[in-house]
Figure (cartoon, rainbow, N blue to C red):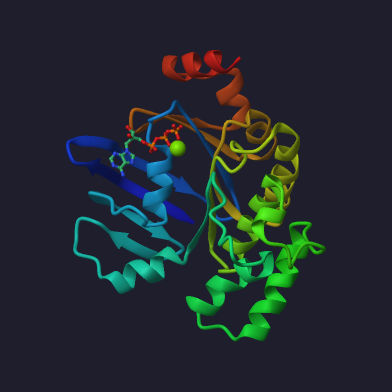
Length: 244
Ligand SMILES: Nc1ncnc2c1ncn2[C@@H]1O[C@H](COP(=O)(O)OP(=O)(O)OP(=O)(O)O)[C@@H](O)[C@H]1O
Ligand SMILES: [Mg+2]
């Protein structure tokens, strides 16, 4: 269970998140949609504590961070490990093979032994359909394959929650499906996921709930069929009309 309470984030004069409240139950998939600049990426980055929120409380499975108080670097580092983040750009280490990319986190951050990290990485790459590409370098992989390595790399840290920030928007259209398939499988296995995406079909098929953000607030949240067919708020309606 994730709970976000009164989350604010300000960059200099610009207030980007203006009091986000959101809960995500364990095993559920929440898709976040909203116009460019509405704060979607900032929200995910706050959850992964890549950004420090100005104030607010984030709790993930009993672990809490209250940003109104001073929080130690150590606490932030351990909190960060609760979430695994998949970015729009894959950010793989170019000089490491697929399997080395997946092994890196557990070895460096968790101090795991090389042999067991390798074994786990193998299993994860097989899971994302890359069992035959383990020793390839990123440059030898397609965008879709690189993104699947990115997913395996995040999973290797055994996070409680997976955060996806437009994981398919940098991909050629024919490669989008293979990444969405991996994400769908993960959802079906019961992974808790927060996904920012423009893939409305994915949202319709996989999301338990869709959250519409605009101007740094949650405007509306509901089951996908409700949001897409009967949006309650004018701003949601306008945004969805624009997509068609
Ligand atoms: N590090 C930063 N410093 C200053 N301003 C920032 C920073 N990161 C984001 N912003 C600003 O915060 C606002 C929200 O950005 P954010 O990236 O969260 O939006 P988004 O909803 O993810 O948009 P998109 O759909 O285009 O990805 C924007 O106005 C952006 O310029
Ligand atoms: Mg973004």
